[in-house]
Amino acid sequence: MSKTLRIRVINLIANSAFAVLLASLPTLLPMTMMSTPAATLSEKQAEAQRIQAQLDAMKKDSERLAAEYTASLNQLESIKFLIAENRQKLEKAQDAYLRSRQVLQGRLRSMYMLGEINAVEVLLEANSVGDMLSRYDYLRYLNEQDMAVFKEMKALRSEIALRQRELEDQEGRQRQAVAALQQKQVELQNSLAAQEKLLSSVNAEIKTLLDQMNSIPRSGGGSGGGSGGSNYVIGSFVFPVRGTYTYTNDWHAPRTGHLHQGCDIFASTGTPCVAVVSGVASTGEGKNAGLYIRLAGDDGNVYYYMHLDRFGQTGRVAAGTVIGYVGDSGNAKGGPPHLHFEVHPGGGEAVNPYPILRAHDPRG
Image (cartoon, rainbow, N blue to C red; front, side, top):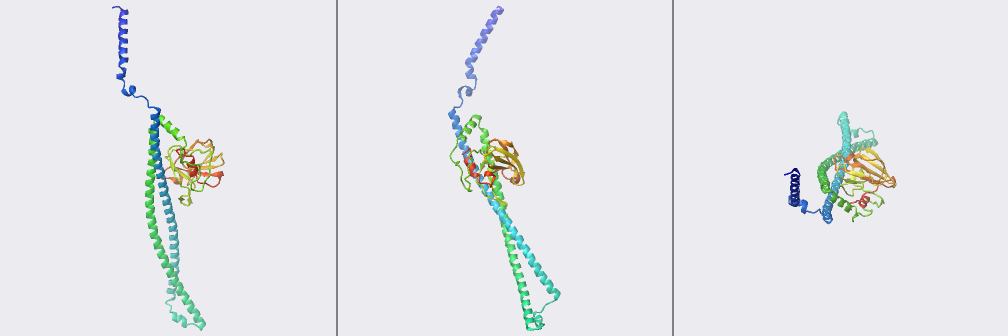
């Protein structure tokens, strides 16, 4: 066989083998690659709706836990106030008791130095009836003063014992309140973490559909009002936390030495905080506030972001720019990470931010 003929035969065999391979390819490839078509848009939308319903249920659970955490914190703060007040009254009673005891000890020392005093002898030594009456009045006065000191000491001793018992009871309630608060903190953080885990598990297409669903306003947000006496409405406003979060109306809740002047938005450490309006963002640090941002809005209002973990962009910023990250700095140390958010219309006194947050919450 010539060389040319051998090449033709080889090519013919190769072409035949390739044809056979093509014919058998459907049986060689995995069934999922050939027989399962890509999910339809309606199927993806149904999956997104299922996940959104699950997220909504988890969101309600987080809101419940946030409310319970706030209630536990309020109870603890009230107990701390009662303890501080009781300790102050106890110290005052103890100081008064010591003063009374010193007076009585001084009287006893005087009586000892002068020897035993016979009232009859004192009266008989009087030079006149007037002198005798004066001596009698003085002895009665001394007796009344001594009795008053005795009575005061007895009353103070009873008060001290009562306040000590109350203090022990209050400290026991405080320990219980701290334990309940710590438990609620764990439950709240676990709830937020579960939402973040669910969101991280969905693919990009479903995530896009979820974002589109949440960009459509849903009922329940309202347009302002609510408890706290604030009906202040802000036309252009971006919610201050971007990510998974929860919050409740804790305006004017009791805090050590003051009333709460903002709203706590609970989220995981490092969750972005964004400018609610365009303006100028400047940084600061305080003993209680920790790391904070002051946003002087172009709308004339001033906004505070407290307890941050770290800062973002500062200076001139547009609405939606990341200017900080959720943390627990300042007196929030040891508690659940959160953003303490305040609104000061015109730079004046703070107003309740809860109605404003509800009105502009993208989750509805």
